[in-house]
Image (spheres, helix red, strand yellow):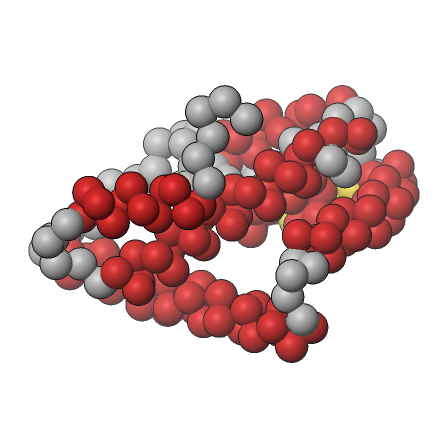
Length: 190
């Protein structure tokens, strides 16, 4: 692939750039590889099983979240999907136009919107998820079942560290100021 560098090349280039700069290399490599792995898996899944369904990763994740949680407020779906509410609005409208998702007003608060799967959406996820899971098995085929469980647990601990202590850490880095809100439509990497 033109312009594509392997993970080994990227690591060598980073090492050369860092030279004598004092950094925590093991932690840098762990976070960089979390991002690389997430990007590689996402790209593979979009270009394999999701391509046949004409779905983006984000659209699939939204369907998955609504499938797992059931009817949910948009703010919850956006948070669980790791996207902004503005991005969710566009994705949910597309999924609604395809007959996979239903958007309804909240029964007691007209400002809120609820998302739920249609019967077609339920059938779609039930049919596509096993194919998706086969690709999850493919991308982890170099790992044993025990290694997959260990990796999942280690990544869970990374997520919990950020969930439980991230806000406090951000405030300390910003001298107590509130972090700037994320702009609509922008995603965090990963």
